Image (cartoon, rainbow, N blue to C red; front, top):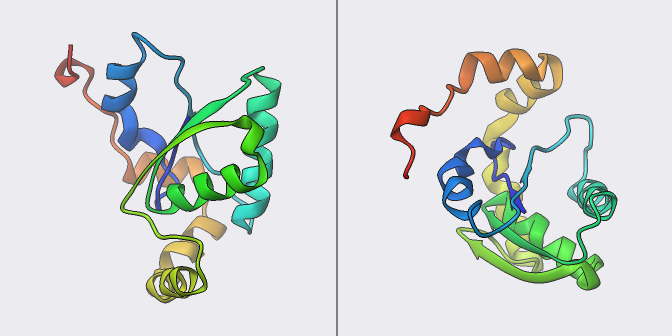
Length: 136
């Protein structure tokens, strides 16, 4: 399962999924608006994995997604086969404080995510991935 980074948009993983789907079942996770805590989000992700009858998952993540993967492994070790993390922070007190400082400058983005329809934001900000330039 690919978890989105800071944007909450999993489309950045598109090339990875195309390369992996020949050999693996792949999922992209798009975070839900209105879920205010990552812990709540990972419990929902675990419910999804259970509903899809996935016994164990490999969490593939970057940035904020790495934080989600660490929480999934902490709360659901029985659902975790492995983690692939990069450009992420650890769950130490210092790591969490560092992340909080980085996100203070995101107030406008967070305001827009809270007040504007997510579908509109995706339409305005996220361009479709050109299928013809995907790896074969």
